[in-house]
Amino acid sequence: MLVIVRHGRTDHNAAGLLLGRLDPPLDPLGREQAVALAAAIGPVDRVIASPLQRATETASAFGRPIEIDERWIEVDYGAFDGMPLGEVPAEAWAAWRRDPEFAPPGGESLRGLGVRVASALDDLTASDGPDTTTVVVSHVSPIKAAVSWALGGDELTTWRLWVAPASITRIATTARGAVVHTFNEIAHLTTADLLDR
Picture 1 (cartoon, rainbow, N blue to C red):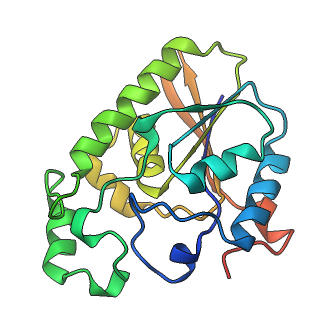
Picture 2: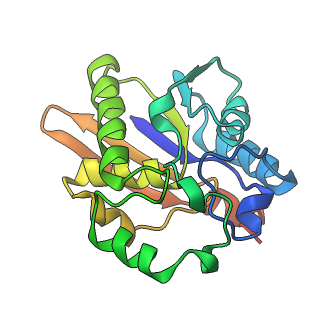
């Protein structure tokens, strides 16, 4: 089973900033979320993480060696990175939503993101056995791309998905293809009052 999780909250997330390649640490709530996340999932065989600090901090809660895979890094928002969501130009949002090749100035397109995430997923499918539980700690956009890959959707499907901080998505890979078992699980956060507040 492939268990793909979003990192815990950062101050940037809490402030409503677009957070791509900037590298802030988890905030105190994010650290609590990481512990709750690892407890909810339980023992795992492998832990893979994006190289960004918020992902590796979350991954460390699993108490296992962390494999860094650059393909799970957040999409590059280029000139928009760190900008309040409401300040991103309306025409940029419109272009992003209709064109998978659109990239912010100095950034990455959804198509580029999808290609690298699909490559990582194909490698995991080839390397992990049917009884292996692998956790991947990543970010909003790669998680959306992974779900789209599993469902056979295109890059623009990602605009119809919402991914909570410290949420869990489970994808099984079978001989017949990928199967989404769960998406955006947050019960481990609601019972512990750890929802993004």
